[in-house]
Image 1 (cartoon, rainbow, N blue to C red):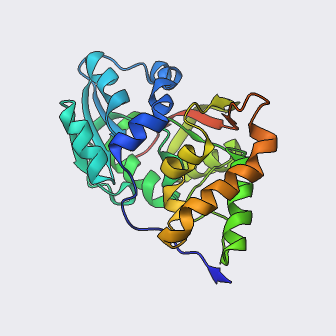
Image 2 (cartoon, helix red, strand yellow):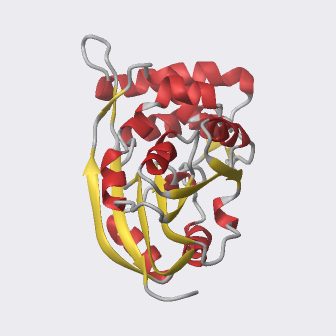
Image 3 (cartoon, helix red, strand yellow):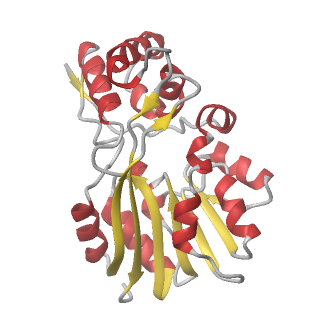
Length: 258
């Protein structure tokens, strides 16, 4: 059995994401409300994806810059008229440039938390705020358990920690405080989420970096096996799928300059 290494390629496809995972940005209203952007504020959207939620911040009058590691997603964001650039979240280049940093459904992909949070702290003006929602402890637990089992059947030993980071409130609070933030609010929110496209399509889009641990010729069969294992927990008698999402939502303020 081989051990998994962190996938490095860009596995994101903006068109496929829009078709199978539009609910991610559609459910972003509560974290936007927590951000409460003011007209004219300079805001960094960290992991902006295709810019669907970024555009809402612009409509509210903020001056927004989006960054994402995926060139395809950035191209889609720019097509919406968003100011956006390809950038590794663990190597942000901004210095005291923003009043707030915002992130929705992206931080859990950024597994080097110290590097990411240090970059966020550098990007903010002193007293600036960091508002985000991400996967938290227990997020898609049934799906991950099925994925780990199927990958093991295929000879790949992994906990998927090299793909996703789903921290508890205590873990995220400690990480934020280490980067110089004061946590003003943080909560873990169970949010069972209907998956209209079905589990295999969810896996094809939202688990692509994890399934990239397998040869391409084995991925379709693996998706079917994962779905079969997860079905007793996540599919109802009519065949409708509900993903076992758990979100971690927080608001923090930069206490000191790094």
